[in-house]
Each structure stands twice: as structure tokens, then as C-alpha cells.
Image (tube, rainbow, N blue to C red; front, side):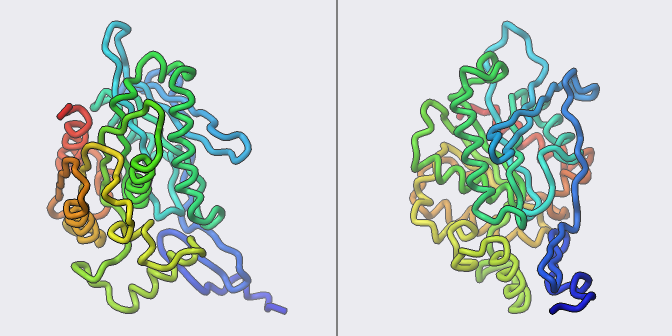
Amino acid sequence: MGSNNDHKEVTFEFPPFIRVYKDGHMERIVEPKFTPPSSSLDPTTNVSSKDVIIDSKTGLSARLYLPQVQESQSKLPLLIYIHGGGFCIESAFSPLYHSYLNSLVAQANVVAISIEYRKAPDYLIPICYEDSWSSIEWVVSESEKEEWFKKYVDFQRVFIAGDSAGGNITHNMAIRAGCFDLKGLKIKGIALIHPYFAKELVGDEIGDVGMEREGKFWKFICPLTTGLDDPLVCPRKDRNISKLGCEKVLVCVAEKDGLRDRGWFYYQNLGKSGWNGVLEFMETEGENHVFHLFNPTSEKAGDLMKRLVSFINTSE
């Protein structure tokens, strides 16, 4: 029998995501607060939002965003956004992402859906990927039913974007989109903001201890994985990478981010893969991982926002 202290003894910790105890129970180190949608116009951005249930059986849900629109204007692009948080923390409904989506929707003048996928360790990978794909399929099925989609969305101009783990999921959704018919939904581009991919044997050397720890974490949240060479986190190992189902890709990295070289390596390898789309790259000097979420009013966060807005609104 375990001792009374087993529930206090930490056997594995991966800050700022999860903590595992000797008796087997787990906890998230950070639990996000819930921010309600803005049923009326958000006072700062004039963006409306509402929550929808995608699958009542699993509880899969999302938040929709609508900019202030004129009835006579043309239909708008759709942005599918996938939040970050190491597959374990954060939420589409947190203050951090609600505020960011309000700003992005207002500046890019797009309709958006922010996916609340189920998170590890309660729901182990690949659940987050399955939930994200189910959400995209839901968008297709609701294109003529959901009021905001039917009235305001041009389904020939769909973009997927995500940061950190959400950038990883975004890439994998584009791979699926290149392999399966989305029945009228056309993904024009994807934006990967400080994406998480596995450590490669280049660039940001983290040493054997760091590699072992990262591998242990990935194995913990994805028990059926082959390891850090899994195509889910190591795109160059994916035989379908050249089938990426979009016309253009924007990869954004930050100079001081430990994931910087991984994003650069992804950009290089995608360019060599045989995929024939347009590939763009942006590096923000002197900044760290997802700095734009924590300091959204800074000049460099503004520059990143402008680049993303331009990426969505430039037709070519």
C-alpha cells in the first residue's frame, strides 16, 4: 500500500503544464479562468461573440466571433483559430485568448471560430487533433445553417492559425485537409505562430537531459507515440507533408524563444518537401515565446498582428 505522503510526492513535473504525483493523480499547474462571450458588441473592438456546442456527447465546443459588419458588404474570410498551451493548459474561453481573438477579428475583419479542444492529461493525444478536425467538419456541415456562417462567410477564403501547440495542430489539420475532401471549404492559408515541434538535431541544443525530459512529457500525453520522431511533432517524418492542403503558409518565430530553431527548421523542410505553395517567414527580434499574447499593446506585438492581418487579407 502507498504511504499517506504519496499524494504529495511529485514524480514528474513539466512547468508550466502538468504535475504528476507518486499515487498517480495529476494536476494542471495553471488553470485558466473563464471569460463569457460578448453577446453585444465588445466595447473596445466592436466584435460580437457566442459559444456553440459542436458535439454534445463529448462536450466539444467553440467560440464564434463576428466583427461589426455592414449588411451590404461582401462576405468575409473565416479564421479557424487553435489556442496553445502545451496541449494541456489554456482555453479558447480564457481572458488571454478571448481578448486576442477580439483584436484579431476586428483588425483582420474576419469571422472566426476559436476551438475549445479537450486537453491532456485528462484526454490524451490524439484527442486534441480529432477534436480540431471534428470542429472543421462541423464548420462545413453548418455552413448553410449557422447564421453567422451563412450570412457573412466566404468559404473559399478560409484560414487556420494557431500558436505554440496550436501551431502544431494547425499544421496537422492542413495535412488532413490535403488528404481529405472538405466539401466546398477551401483553406487558403495557415499561420503557425511560434509553433511547437519536436527537438531536431540542429539549432536549439537542449542537451541529453532536456531531450529525455521532453520525450518523457510527449510520451506521457501521447502514450501510443513512437517518440519525438512521431510525424505529429516531427513534420519532416510525415510522408504526406508535400500534400499540405493550403495555398500559402506563414511561419512566425521569436528570436529568444526556445522553439525558434524548430520553427525555422519546419520552414526550411517544408520548402524542400515538394509542396508547391507560397511560404512566408517572420522573425521578431528580442522577444520570447508568445510575447504578443502577454504584451499585446507593444510595438512588436502590433507588427506581428499587422503581418497576420496582411497574410489573411492579401489575395495572392
